[in-house]
Amino acid sequence: MPSKPTIAILALTLLAPALAPPLAAQEAPSLQQRVETTFAEAAPGTRFGLVVTTEDGREIIAINPDQRFIPASNTKIFTTAAAFATLSGLDQPDADGGTAVRLEPSGKGAPDLVLEGRGDAFLSSAADCTSDCLATLADAVAAKTRVVHDVRGDDSLYPNQRWGAGMSWNNIPTRSGTATSALTLDDNELPLRVTPGAVGAKPRVDLSPYYNVFNTAVTVATGKTDLEFDRAANGKLVSLSGTIAADAKPEILLLGIDEPALYAAWTFKRMLEARGVRVTGTVTARHRPLGPTDDPAIRKGAPAPRPPREPVLAQLTPPPLAQDLTLINKVSQNLHAELMLRRISRRSGSGSIADGTAEVRAMLERAGVPRTAYDFSDGSGMSSYNRVAPRGVTILLRWIAGQPWGAAYRATLPIAGVDGTLSKRFVGTTLEGKLFAKTGTLNASSALSGYMTGRSGRMLIFSVYANDMPEGTSATKLMDRALELVAAEN
Image 1 (cartoon, rainbow, N blue to C red):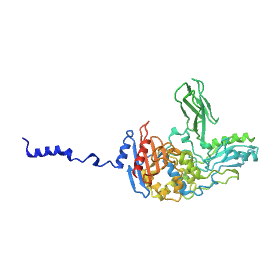
Image 2 (image 1 turned 180 degrees about the horizontal axis):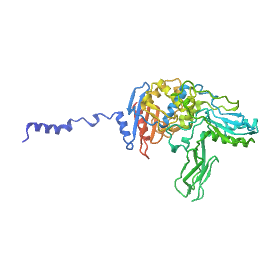
Image 3 (image 1 turned 90 degrees about the horizontal axis):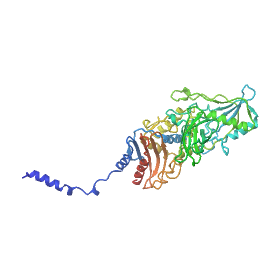
Image 4 (image 1 turned 45 degrees about the horizontal axis):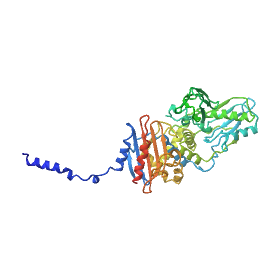
């Protein structure tokens, strides 16, 4: 016979289910727990960071808020904000940034022709160009002289830093990694058109003679078009491989250009010759090597002034910088972002990456962002050396919202389900048309930071990152679902 204490324990055990509170009365998971559960669905090894705050800075949710993440194109948030914070006359035509032409003595009879870059991101050689056209400068030269010696592309306004530290070599042949230069033409991209041939034969390729093509691609009867190209850095031979379906439409591949100033001068020479201007010399480029005076940590005082130049024969006027800032954020244009960083640096520096990032850093100090929350090696986010912390990003975004230009800045961001890089995200959700944010994707890194309207109608500020995703996996849908959870309860 059991003892009395044993009987009491047995009775309590039998009564336990009856004494337990109903399931509905148990404490529900918190919002943060539900977001963490969502993130737990990601592939093993994926690391997340998320901060969401109210307009007054109160944090609603924080997951790894001070860990540092590769921001990818979220870097453009900092570059474009620094432009708004430091540059004036953004809505006016860019009188200081237009490409110019000069005639310089050559000592060879005919003068040298210098095409001088000033950081213009919109210079175009398109046949249907109507604004900021290289053809306008060619017309001006043809009206002045019928013979020139050398044609020189001059990008010495900025030091010769075509890529920031940490640029992945595999991106350099592509439009995403095209080189940066003060003399930029057609976004420093060349289209390679690939048209199917007969089944089993090579497809036809059409490309500017600036590059040569080694074509090993094959036309196939059925299947998916899968074309790849490669090119050695500073090389002129493009290797095309893969397959294209016989019934496919022509495929357009956009190639990057490593020597933008030389390419611009080469194109300009062809335009001049088409107008009857004889070129007796060669096509060359003038660069300015990177030196100690281009680093504000070393330089004492202002950068050295540029040497005197011959008078300008003609100069273009690019569109307002505000138009470029919108383009940079809406479609995540890498080259334009890099040029904007150099433009920012010209305010007090030499046009170098170091001077540009110094301006960004000064802005972040004014905004109260901790120094441990960021490091930058470029202006576009293509560098794998860049790092940001989600909490620091929300501090900056809150500061931006309070600036006189805050509304204009927000208007440059993609809108969920509407335009830019967010046109296909959040479609059919409560955040469609109510989230304004900059995207980012690079080497196992995804990012999204900006503003969204919660269910209550209040504006929320957020920054979310996923890094270290295994190859072949994505965390984008989980990031979007987490933001939808937060917006639904705030």
